[in-house]
Image (cartoon, rainbow, N blue to C red):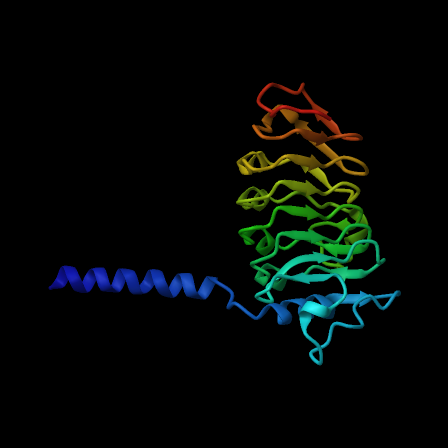
Length: 225
C-alpha cells in the first residue's frame, strides 16, 4: 500500500511539474493575432485583413487545409517591424513558415522548433538576435543559433542568412536528419569548426562570409552547392 501511495505521489509531482512548464494551447487564429500584436510597424498594411470578423484562412499570407488548419504562413518582403511571439508555436499544422526580408528583432522563439510538420523555415534577412527589441544592447547584434533548432522533427529547409548572427553553429543542428538545405551565410559571422555538422541528407549548404575553420567532410551529406 505504501508503495502504491509513493508511486502515486511521484506521478502527481511529475504531472504537476510538466503542466506548470507547458504553455496552454490556444486556437490558431489567436496565435496569428498574437503575431499581429507583436508587429509594431506595418507600412504596407499587410495584416489589415487579420481580424476576427473574417476567417483566418482568408487572411493575407495565410494558407489553410480543408480542415481550416494553417499549413503555410508567408509574410516575406513586407518590411514588417516587430518580434516573433512564442504563440506562433501553436500553429502545429504549419508546414511552411516564411518571414524573410523584414525587420524582425529579438530571439526566434524556441516554441517554433516543436511544430511537428514544419518542413520549410525561411527566417533570413531580418535582425534576429538574443535581445528583445527594447533592450539597450540591441545595436550589438549578439544573436546566436539556439541549440533548440536541433529539435525540428521534419525540417527540410532552414535559412537564417542575413541576420548578423554570431558564435558557433550548434552541433544540435546535426540532429535534423531530414534537413536538405541549410543557409547560414551572408552578414552572419559564425566561428568554430564546420566539421561538427553531421547532416547526412544535406545537398545544399551556404556558408559564405563566415569565420568557420576546418574543412568540409563526407559526414556532411551529398552536397550539390
